[in-house]
Image 1 (cartoon, rainbow over the protein chains, first blue to last red):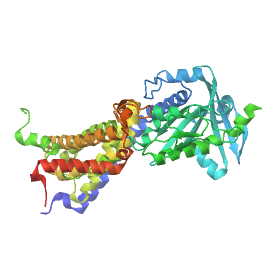
Image 2: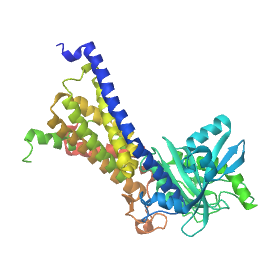
Image 3: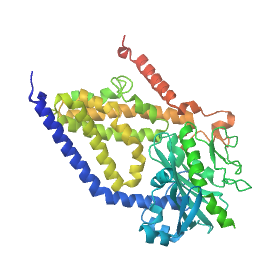
Image 4: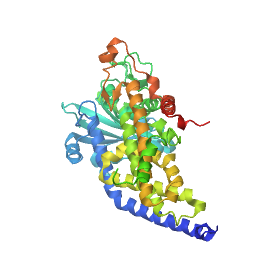
Length: 262
Length: 214
């Protein structure tokens, strides 16, 4: 039986019409919602940085940010300076304050796209390293650095707060599409809290990083000097991604912390 | 059920047991393996599929007389992808926290074979109301198995349920762990999901011999 809908001309017209209608709806939606989405993402970055500083609404074992409505104000209050370090060929060649960077780039340093900067490092050997200086609730000055890497399925990223000896004081990790229940658990408090107190530098000041270790003989994580935290069962590749992004991205900041000690 | 005729209520009850999409039709296995390491993820995925399959089935059913048969699979794919993306974008703008929880599932929903399977097998040949019931029924059947598998994997694999330590603390050795019980880490890996689904299939078929095929 030959149907009207079996004709080639009808099929073609339908396909074209469908693409236009669906494409139009999606394009309209994307462009009308993008300011709201961009605003949400901005606030999320502020919440992430504040979380690493120890400013959050954690309840028991679940990680809870401070309210989105309070985030901009708290961010202003607690993040006292946003430094922008220019990294070139293995060393830091320039340090800008927030104001200097804003005058030049007309953008808040915390909005610097880490992924873009990582690509720049690959292609041109230079990149900007944002570093947020703030105070934790106990009044201690901490430095928060953004890091980014690859998990099993997609991007993973995080913010690590260290003191001037590069001892981790807080960490926040997030991911785009890690497996729920396994790799996705890097954003659970039990994993993130393990990093607190871990040293990134050894006694002679050599950068060791922190390894997410499977064979960790210290599951309670009492030993803070072993440069290791306990891995999540079933999330080996995500854990390796966390190890790699800490080594790669945080390692670049070491020269800056050396200047702090002088 | 007074609201539904006998035929209509079968659309809901059948996929729950005797024509379950996972255990009988063996559809949607990929997501059943991928996200059942935790009970919460299973529940979120079940609700998402319930929504997408219910609405998608109605949309496809309304369009069933104008969809050219040669490209019907592509049309179905476009419909489900558009639906999921619209929901994702709206959530990102107005319920950001919720969208973060769901973002991982977006890809899994679009590629879920149950959705395409029900579009193809049911919505293309039935009216919107019956298609809606069929969608709800199949999603519920899918969700039932997902939650069952998630329950056992989280309980035996991590010793928790919905994140609460129900068996005690494995590191501090309290509760059940005090008498030598250990979590089975293998339960968290995908192969065990397959085995759990297999066990469910076995139990189901041994209770109802009519389901056994030659």
